[in-house]
Amino acid sequence: MNPLFERFNMQGQVAVITGGGRGIGEGIALDFARAGAKVAVAARRTAEIESVAEEVRSIGGQAIAVTTDVTDSEAVERLAAKTIEAFGKLTTWVNNAGGSAARMPLTELPRSEWDKTIDLNLTAVYVGCMTAVTHMEKGSIINISSGAGFSPVPGSAHYGAAKAAVNSLTWTLSAELAPHIRVNAVAPGAIPTEIMLKALNKDETQLDELLTEWNIPLGRLGTPEDIGSACVYLASEAASWVSGEIIRVGGGAKPR
Image 1 (spheres, helix red, strand yellow):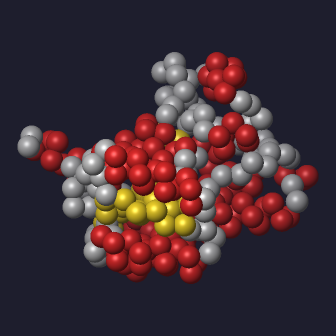
Image 2 (spheres, rainbow, N blue to C red; image 1 turned 90 degrees about the horizontal axis):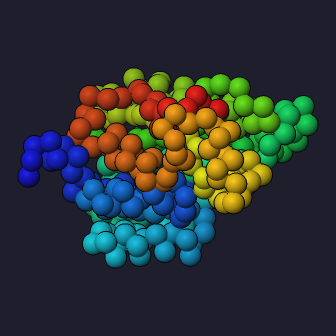
Image 3 (tube, one colour; image 1 turned 180 degrees about the horizontal axis):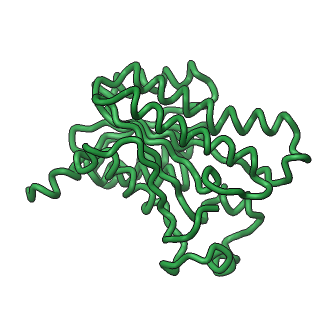
């Protein structure tokens, strides 16, 4: 194999993907499988993750589906244990599960929605990182951030605050866990997943409108595979000297 290609080869690696049943998580899981990794697909909806795992198998990969609520620390520990039971080790953990459909001024946001958003988008990432560290001798942790963690997004202060904290967690853990575990994050731009469209109160008939609103220099909306490719790079030997970075994948658009 070409030495450059070998550095991107994920054969022999084992990746956990949370929120892997659809959207960006599904794209990440499939790209890891295409690169040769064995994958554990985790989310709350069993039918969805079973479907993704079956798709991985259909392209010649190996996968398990593990029903997991990432806000339940015991469930996250079971996810790690089942992954190791199935594949013998754990080398990559992708904290992808997250999101918030609530969009309103912070002064109108119920405290319960704030707590729910922080629990899913920050505390669950912390739990995922700590679980990975417990079971990973050497490897990579990848957190999925957001442009909302970099700049004001009116109506999404709760979500933006959580993602800004994820960025800080990523930077600090990259220093604390070096040199054996690398920690990075990917901040997706406009990926028209079901969750994003719901948050923006749009549907699939309004994609051209979304493209115009985001003013994307590269002229198209993103795909889950765009994020998957970035994650594969960060987990691969090609990124062996990359840690503590937040990679924006958004077609050149300003974060929002």
